[in-house]
Image (cartoon, rainbow, N blue to C red; front, side, top):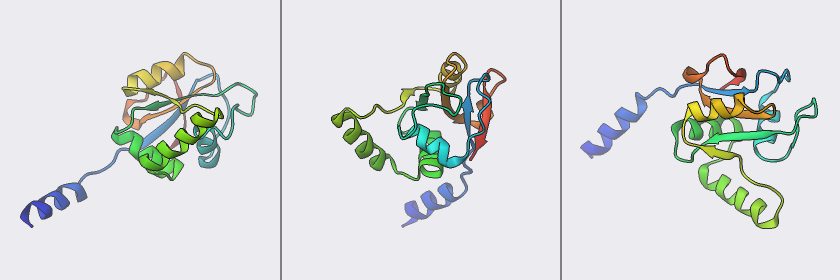
Length: 134
């Protein structure tokens, strides 16, 4: 019981950082939560300007990934695994490319005109443009 109370008190004191959704600076699109979700779930394949989307994600198990999945996609890791398994199996889509760090996601998005990704808001630099924060 004491261990449970300690764990609960530690977890309740944790503050989650904001998740910043970033795009290549050449992309002038304004994106809302629904559009971002559609882009990351393979339901939209291009931005409104016609540029093909290249989504980048952080690896599963990353705290920022859990925040993004819950706040933007409204899905758990298990739900996303099932979702992507079905799309991959039927040949209808591939999940976003998973990278291991915020720096890798920022670099990938900055180097791709169709790039979109998410990172901890504290990691953003001027090589990308923030379109939303959750």
